[in-house]
Image (cartoon, rainbow, N blue to C red; front, side, top):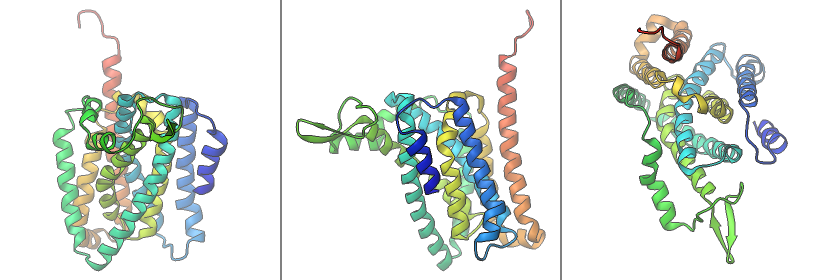
Length: 312
């Protein structure tokens, strides 16, 4: 992970520049292949205690976390739009945002694992929370996010930071800090990074319980999160310009949360009915829901753009 990030930022993005769609798509594919290689080839051979079903469990967790990250991508796009961050500098914000997300999520996973190990009944509470969260997303899935950029003007993080921290009114290249009149001040780019980090914590409140619904093994939980987060930066540059084509993705994500929540509530019964096939069934259901929601979104978008005959 460290080597990959060092190559990405240290060699490929030493200087701020705009990331092309082709480059972002290549990196997205690279991270997906890396995750599959880890879960299917490296971990079964090198990780002590790795069991046969752990590869399927890792892939399920990876798909769930990567899918939930797509919703995060759209919010990040709104943040960049509101602050008018040039595309050439967005990569730097996402890089440091991902490092912060790895640390914050690692702490949340460790704390959650310890709590569940001591109080296993908490899983039922998390399951009910996911069902409630998914139901709420289903009710609001048709409302869209059009007002997200304007809502940031009242964001409590933005208001608190501007009130308590010295923040300049202008960007200074890719710098997060600038010295003015002998005093260090934060640039708006640092404020953007702060909002992105806060947004990730909010999304982790949904995604971390979801991964606990798939496995309770901290190593599997953390690695599936790591690979999903590492691919988030390149995934952003792939999806940010095509947000309008994924109108049903939020509905699909909501159904995934409801499904995982119900699985947590009925874990014992499902294990009796499906046994060792439970992981494969979970993976198939998650992939199927996401695939259908994406396919439906693309089909509707294509139908709307297709030229219609006169008088139709």
